[in-house]
Length: 484
Image 1 (spheres, helix red, strand yellow):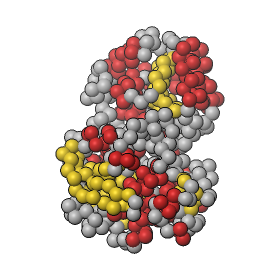
Image 2 (cartoon, helix red, strand yellow):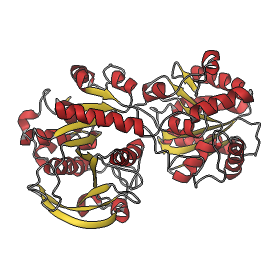
Image 3 (spheres, one colour):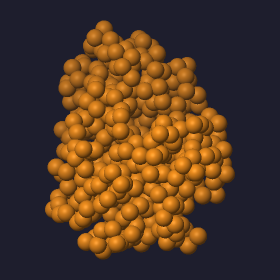
Image 4 (cartoon, helix red, strand yellow):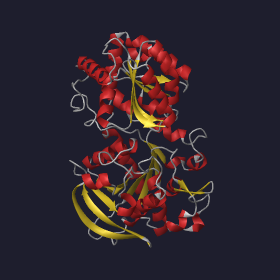
């Protein structure tokens, strides 16, 4: 199977969130299972500086007013081929993939990701890039940034090429003023409910959901949730109509990148049979965060975007109780400025119990996942979530809410699940301060029982959470879309 995997970010080239982790790991896992797969990504400075063995493979006229060069190379230290869209004016800027250095959306994001989508469709015709001598059978799109690809293929009637859109987070939809449809050379007749129109806007995601041959979500539970009013963000009706085309596949994680036995970001290695060293990592983290080094103090951790979606406001409301109970908490992330300010305020007032690092720091994220006792992830919605999986891998039981991939991946601890060796963490029924507080008190009572706690840790560390199962599920989906 020839698959073109189209994404706006991929680790280790460039990352803002979980999409990058998936886009870096899944294609590589598929490549190892003999899928003929190539990754298409914009040529941000970070991408151009890291892709290996680059060579120019062609020039494309994308729109009547926009062209680009295409460069082929390889993901660092892999055999995964990467095709880079090189357009200096669109992608080679100071800032992130979606925002400038001040956190403001690039004003021309519709053009930047319209080009990404259109190039993906043009690569489905071998006459466009003869040096590539390769035409995909399937284009695997990811989130709104690639949502116009199925639409552009629809315009060319390229029925021989099938499209799959993976929805990583339905809340991000790529909705823009309809004036953009002319710049993006879209058919105005398709600006309607049975097309890419969404409440008066041109919607990249709606276009993908409507025109793609198959839809995928990043967990089975999320596939059901997005068809409800609570989680559908206005698209639930269309998603209900396409229910038979939606497949939920739980994400995996890169178990080489996230491995407490070999993780170079950790001062001590450990595994399920040698958990004592995890305590040494905790001490190192406490020291690094300038917290009192104390083995008998429960240490909670958060590595997250600091947003309402992630339930950060509930954690903030609970911090006074955590302090009263004598706990410590380490926070790493960035997001809503009000949340950042509140957390920093607690860190200033209670420096021996609260440590906050604002920003993105990959080495520190590994150290926090390994060094804390309990990981907090009380998201209001979570399509899949990866940090709870990192928690399992690192023997750090998570507290999660009963939603999306969190519910699919964490087995709540009860007397019964402890007895049958399936308990891996703690699942809150409701996303509010009281529910979190009740769960924390339950967790702390079990944490004091070293035997039970070790049971939960080792259960989690034994879970099969690599990409092999997920990659095989995607291969099954690829076969399905090719035979439909």
